[in-house]
Length: 342
Image (tube, rainbow, N blue to C red; front, top):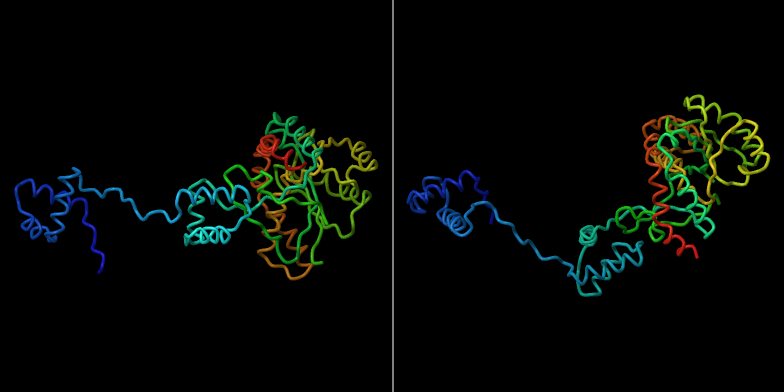
């Protein structure tokens, strides 16, 4: 049977008005061209509820019982990497047939959604303490302080797309909880190595590293690219240079070179690439490059340079503007990370 069209509010009001003047349901139906049974239903609703508006409906009962919801929540809490298929099978074994969509909707009502697992460094207790020390020491730094930092790092870009992601079930603002992350280690053909830098004002120089980098090569890269980037971005006097604790960066000769150039270097905690906002830019770059599908190394290098230059300055500014959020996350997760690392 075809579904009948719902009466407008005006028509329903007319039915009630005519009923109050003493007219019969049959007469009202003929006058308004509405079935007598419909007129009667409208009048009964008005007499019972004093309204002709649609009333709240209970809808179909939930497929997963409250006990089933608790069991599902317990499962994803213990193992956030549980797939929807696994959860569907769990419910099946418990005697309830559900779909993956039902699982997603159930978890979302509990404040849980599927997110890409953050890749964070594999930390030892000494690393955790160093990260906490860095976060606490810089928690009160202003946005202007971070705007005056030149961030730098290396990255590897694959010829055939970005690395795959893993999804986890988590609540909002828990992306750095160890159970919701994927531990990584530093650099382990079809790829190229890049060195680049950026500040809140935009991207700096990006160069390809064609050989295994050593201290001498790194100093040459800085000599030819760092100060040019600072001038191009018109950074203020007293700007600060950031790089991590890679041995070639912290070699005595490199430290001496930086000292002679009178460059102020941001003291950096080991195993903390996630604290460097350039990691977000690398991700942005790799997504852009993957869309263009380079077919050889030459094209990959060319596209990397083009896409790096296209990244808007506003993206860089926003990464730096929200930098304090990273420090807050480190402090908020301190006890969990300590337990995780032991």
